Structure formats: structure tokens, C-alpha cells
Amino acid sequence: ASLAFKVKSKNGQQVLKDLTSDSTVGELKLFLSSISDVSCDRICVLCGYPPKPIDVSNDSKKLSDIGLKTGET
Image 1 (cartoon, one colour):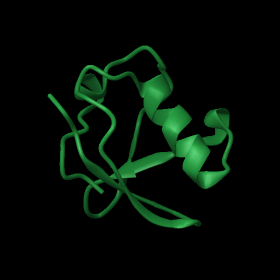
Image 2 (spheres, rainbow, N blue to C red):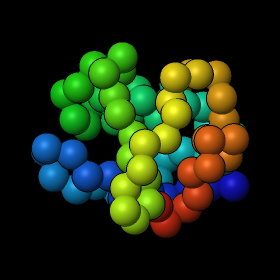
Image 3 (cartoon, one colour):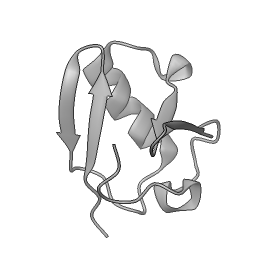
Image 4 (cartoon, rainbow, N blue to C red):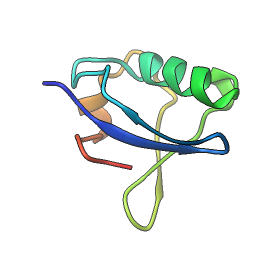
């Protein structure tokens, strides 16, 4: 299934629509790195309200496995 996220970084906000629930954590980190100028190994992902850290240490995990759902910020 296609996912849509709102991404906030020091460079502003963007909507990410290019990933699916089968996409990997590694793909997410590559995208986040490209829009934020932060290297993949330093990416920290927070989700929900209040924002809580999500474990993105395993690049081969699917986004559905780490609990990311469409509409998240």
C-alpha cells in the first residue's frame, strides 16, 4: 500500500509519497538524508504526538514492521 508522510526537518516541511508499506527503513533514511542534508547514519525518526523515537537501526526492515502508517508526521 502507498504511504504518505509529512516530513519536518531543519529545511522545512515536505510530503513524502514515494514509499509503500513494503519499502525498507534504508529507503526511508536515504530519502530523509536527501531532503535534510543529514547523513543516513545520523538520521533519527520521531513519530506520533508527542513525538517518540522509532527504531530505524535495521535498514532491511519494512516500514510496516516499524509501525509507520500513512498520515504520520
